[in-house]
Length: 382
Image 1 (cartoon, rainbow, N blue to C red):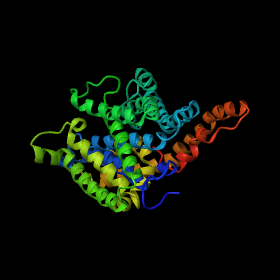
Image 2: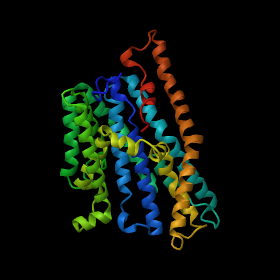
Image 3: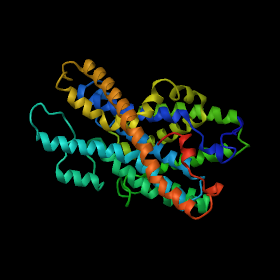
Image 4: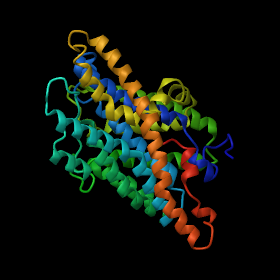
């Protein structure tokens, strides 16, 4: 059991559920969804600019990196656990991605731009092949190949950390700094991997502070609240409108040090501050965090199809309120009817061979090789 005096007094407490991170995921989805509404209606266009929604994607990536390290770094690097990691990640991301891709392809092929057909992501046969091979993603789906590539690379960092924590932490920090030393986008293998690495680095920092019993919980609370306030202010300053006012230039969102500091401080505040638990761990944001993946992949389908009913130029606020409300309703329905059931079904089906392989060897798995599923169910889905 976790004592109130420290954050991670033992390995079992290190995989605790952090409600504020649910809310941060909801906030990330909301930033993306609202920024696209802003572009279509002109509402707060000066604040969001043409790239404000990228901050939501950056937050998604950092949360993904944090949660992978949070859930897996303290688990043994075994073939069994590696298999369960792969199953969990595939079951989380792939089914809904395939559904959106295949529906878009089917509608594109059937309708061929005929009047009255619903709007979908344009999907030719070549585009379908590219999506299935994860070469690219249309519209918001561009992030899915990036995310899956990170999942493929994550076991390397997991293994390195398990072999030597200092070497693993040093390698992760060094790679993160290298992203900002090289020209933007020049990092080989994974061009946009730096915010995944930032999430991992923040997890290691929180684990180090939480395990250090010399650091009083009140100090962590005060420091976390300070980090939260600074993180929120820096995130606001990172939006193109305010960034231009402060620095008299357009931001390079993915490569600005201020964005890196903003996301790091926001994550630290979410971990250590009770204020963050109140702000992000209650009310609407945790709910949006639950349906965030469905909302992220499908909100543009709602927005574009609403154009036929309401002109966003003539009725911007009506369009914005109705479109966002319908997008959240659709995401909720998809989450409960498809995303969540399919994820759990795939986990059961794909995990069974690993369990059977263990039982066929005539011995139960040891405690250190115990399935990670029960641990993950008590943590936030990433």
